[in-house]
Amino acid sequence: MNSNPKLKGQSALVTGASSGIGKAVAIALANEGVNVVVNCSSHPERGQEVVDEIKSSGGTAIVYQADVSKEDEVQAMFAAMYKAFGTIDILVNNAGLQKDSAFVDMTLADWQKVIDVNLTGQFLCAREAAREFLRRGIVAERSVALGKIICMSSVHDMIPWSGHVNYASSKGGVMLFMKSIAQELAPHKIRVNSISPGAIKTRINASEMETQEEIDKILTLIPYNRIGEPEDIGKLAVWLASDDSDYITGATIYIDGGMTLFPGFAGNG
Ligand code: NAD
Figure 1 (cartoon, rainbow, N blue to C red):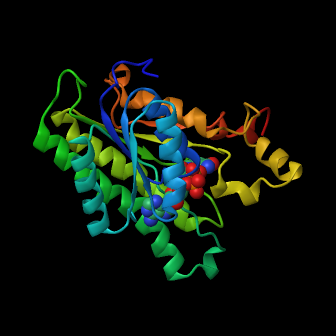
Figure 2: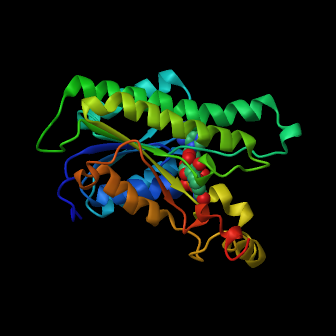
């Protein structure tokens, strides 16, 4: 606990934190002494399990059920956070989903759902966080920044992905959403960055990693030759949230074992 005193006493909201990457980020932040809101869209008992795990290690957390694509639910969630912890210092826009199909078969509903959650959800939460940072002002003893926003993007904000056109479009959107608000908010000392993971073992891709053959196929895309763990992302989120990364804003950090190095071109391609 509290190995990074610079984060102690800050408050974070992590969306989609009842599983996978969000859960690992929530636990990693809580282990640094951050008060955490564990957001989940359904199954609050799973969010409560994350809260219980955090509390059993001496951390502070609450669970809050809200759909990040619904404006009224997002605003109610931020109000509940301010009631519990007073304010917000760190937003981790992590909630996301996939609804895959061949492009010609993609329904408008599946296109819209992915854009609503993966992109509009990030807009709604970032806007609320930025409003609170600006209202509250700097708290010098907690952070030199007014606030920190971390957007969970994907290597598919730059690698095209057939069969996943809605998902890749949403993450491509997150990239310029993040950079545009980073540009707009930097003069206020609000830092905004993206984490773009490669293949991380979570339920979002569980069906693509069921057999050794499937895992071996994915490994051909990863020069570093291992699938990522949610904890890899947790460690990066802690650093991006802390003043140790104070000069970084508007950046996309690829955390992918080299997937974006185009390994198919190794040798003569
Ligand atoms: P996951 O399915 O375990 O986590 C996604 C979380 O988002 C779930 O807890 C889900 O309940 C939540 N969620 C979905 N819709 C929501 C909504 N409307 N409101 C609030 N929460 C909602 O999968 P994950 O891999 O941990 O994904 C987390 C993030 O990481 C996503 O944004 C995903 O696109 C991104 N990502 C994952 C990988 C990977 O390889 N696992 C790679 C790149 C990016």
